[in-house]
Image (cartoon, rainbow, N blue to C red; front, side, top):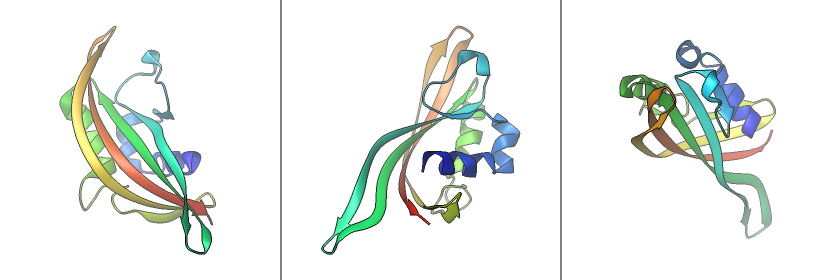
Length: 133
C-alpha cells in the first residue's frame, strides 16, 4: 500500500507541479526543500468478517502538506483532499497491483519552525482500504 499510494500521488501532475518529487514516507530532510508531502501510517488493521479474513486492510494514513507559507501548504492539501476534486477524495483505483479505496477523515492546520523559519503544515487524515489486486 505504501508505495502504491506514493506512486498515485507522484502521478498527479497538479501535485508534482507544486512539490516536484518531494513526497516521502516518514522524516523529511530539511535540505529537500518546500513545499513537500510527508506520509505516515498511523495504524493498519486486517479486516475480518463472519467468514474470516476479508483480504482487505484498513490503514489510517496521516498526510502532512508542508510549505513555507500557509497558502503553499493549503494549495498542496487542496490537490490531495479538496472535496469533489482532491485526488484522494473517495478514490477507488488499482495502482501497482494494489486495490486502493480512500476516504478523507479530517483536515487541520498548524505550524512549526526549522532552521530557515516557519513551516506551515496542513495534516490530512485518510482512511485507506487496500488489498492485493
